[in-house]
Image (cartoon, rainbow, N blue to C red):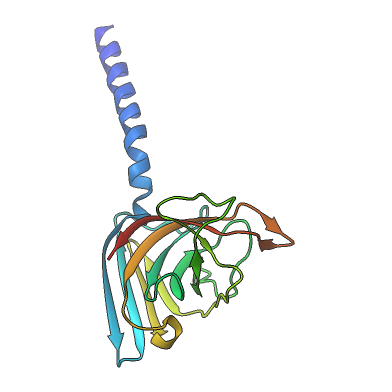
Length: 185
């Protein structure tokens, strides 16, 4: 009887501890560990990003990685499909990631406000350039990005983020909310 109680208590403790720890592990794909940026021939940019945990490719949530070169305009992003709508003709069918160059702005309702929150400026031009990318295990690579598309080659920040679409009208998002999870200057 004593052995059964001890075993049951030990299993319950392991379960509770695993439930507390699991969220930090599961979000590790948006925790940046390191990055490397190379300018090739003064004309193109190549970015490699490494994260804490394996990058999921199941498209169950929208998240991605951003390269900021000129403030909030012309931000290069590599993102999964936003589940609320089909947002790219250039999707990598194996991993569901694709690139955009877009502008960000201060968030308005219904997007959350405060530090680390932004909104995609849907009124500005959003390009869907289809830059070469590779997502494997804990690494992301974006290759052959023309510097002219980004304004300049001076990378200011690399970020990992989540994205939500609070509402969609006629298949088009009304807002795309962005929450920065981690950055590397």
